[in-house]
Image (cartoon, rainbow, N blue to C red; front, side, top):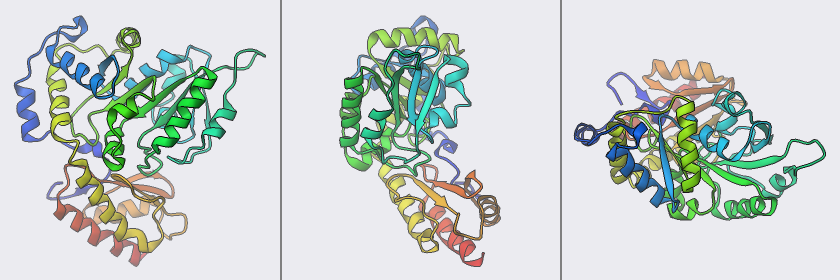
Amino acid sequence: MTDLFVDLRSDTVTRPTAGMRAAMAAAEVGDDVYGEDPSVNALEAEVAALFGHEAALFAPSGSMANQIALQLSVSPGDELLCDADAHVVTYEIGAAAAYGGISSRTWPAVGADIDPEVVAGMIRPDGYFAVPTRAIAVEQTHNRGGGGVIPLATLRDLRGVADEAGVALHCDGARIWHAHVADGVPLIEYGRLFDTMSVCLSKGLGAPVGSLVVGSADKIERARMIRKRMGGGMRQAGILAAAGRYALAQHIDRLADDHAKAARLAEAVAPFGVLATTVRTNLVALDLTKHTLDARALAAAARAEGVLISVLGPRTARLVTHLGLSDADIDRAVAALPRIFAAA
């Protein structure tokens, strides 16, 4: 990625391409809080159509988009169900409770391998002074689940569970583009399964900023008020929206290249018994519980070799491929990582 380091920490480290910068510079803009930014309006309409929903709302971050969506379905004091490693309860600094007054309960972390019957058995109805369940959230692809892809059949079963119980189904679709490319499921097919979605432009798609909340027209009207309350109302945001539209046009199909690069990394480290999950997309999860290196030691050794990796826990690390990496960068990492593991 640079002359000094191959950056495998995250796909959020990408920088706008030359074509994206040109699109940003040429963007037509207006005041989005007044609904007058044509580039933002076009982006919102485009993303809503991709997923077969009525409307969408541009937000500064994936965390804000998720939290807006959750507040649309779960009233203060009511309950959200999700898995124990879900981004909405792991990496959003307690926002569901702090901003939405939402109580959350989790099923054991299983990544993309969700059992809909387990989820169905956790739903609490109204009455008996129990906290009622109002929504179920899933993550596609699953970050801490090693970029795992929830099968379409599982999502359909979860839709049935939600309908039977009368609760909402939300998708944290930060990397849903990767699932679309990996499994060939049309985006509109994913969209019809969820009441609300958040989809991110600043990870695999390489835009500098932004996610969108996707849902019905009435939900998105409410979402605009929640976004403003949370400080997410932006003004001439069309410069950022233009980057997102460029990413949608240019960077979805190329995600297959990132998947191939991740598979190369996985093949290089597999002999050392550290692969946590089968690699399906652009994330390579490393489980170091049976290795002499812990995650911080691995990261330090990799940095000394010019490779940056992410530390997710004492014995958990992660490699992420993205559009900022060349084949030569992957060659460098593929040479360095086995050398580090073998020497430990």
